[in-house]
Image 1 (cartoon, rainbow, N blue to C red):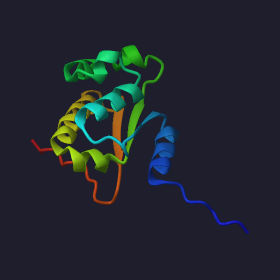
Image 2: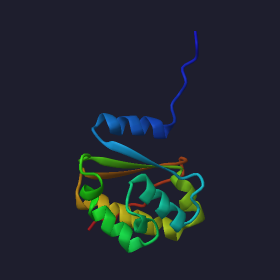
Image 3: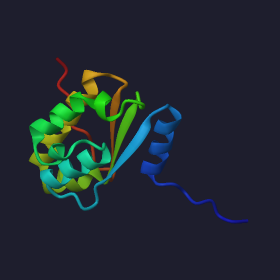
Image 4: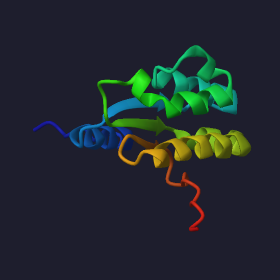
Length: 130
């Protein structure tokens, strides 16, 4: 009897999101050690216009206009694998990008969902309860 292969946590989460009706886009973060590289990866994964990859204001604007870039996908999930790499190498960049993505996902609940997967030490920074 063959041993059952276990799926990675990211693969399991991606499958669950897809089952919930999300179009899942993945950022592979193992080599993303600074804000700009991570920004490019996010913009590429979400098929955003070129300036979103190099300009933070353009990234924010593009995330506000997701319906323009994803008109046939009402629910979009960004699955970030190995998120701990950026968090470890560029904590300020991680916080900046996390704030931008959190704002985008909170603006239209259910439209954009952000999930990060890394080592057990990786945690999303708690949001202020206000």
